[in-house]
Length: 202
Image 1 (cartoon, rainbow, N blue to C red):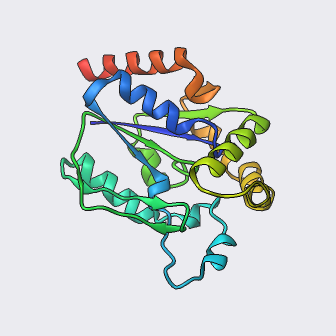
Image 2 (cartoon, rainbow, N blue to C red; image 1 turned 90 degrees about the vertical axis):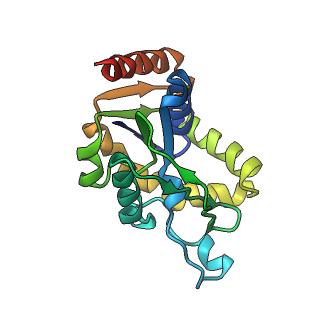
C-alpha cells in the first residue's frame, strides 16, 4: 500500500486535490479525511462547541486516526468515521472501509504527528493565497455548514488564520511536492496520479 499525505490551509483545496488524484487512479485509491476525526464533545452545549478552537492539532482524535490508518496499512478494514459540522458532533457509521492500493490522507494537521509522517510515501502541501482560502471558506461554510458570514469571519480571525500563521504554514517544510492552486491544478493532479501509477507498477 502507498500512503499519500495532503496538507495545507483550511479551504485550500486539499479535498478536491485528493479526490482528483483518487479519480485518476480509478478504484485503487481511498481518501480518508482527518476532518472526520474531530474530537466529540457531547458534554458541551452548542454555544460552547462553537467557541472551541478547531484549528489546532489537539482538536483531533489523532490516536484514533493513526490506529485506523495503521489497520488499513496492515490489511484490515475500518469503520467509516464522520463529523457533522452543523451540530459539531461525530457522525460515525458502521460501513466498512476496505484496504486499497493507495491511501490518501488529507487534512490541515495531517503532517502534525511524526508517526503519520513516517508512514507517508509522498507528501503534498497545497499552497493557496489567504484571500482565496477565505473566499472559499465563506462559500463552503454558508452553503454546506449552514453558518452565517459573521460567524465564519469571527472564527477565521480568532482561530483559522492564527493557526495557519503559527503552525500550518510551517508544514510546507515536510512536503515532497508543493501544489499551487490546490484541486484546481489539473496538471498537478495528472502528474501525481501518473507518478503514483509508476510506483504501483513497480
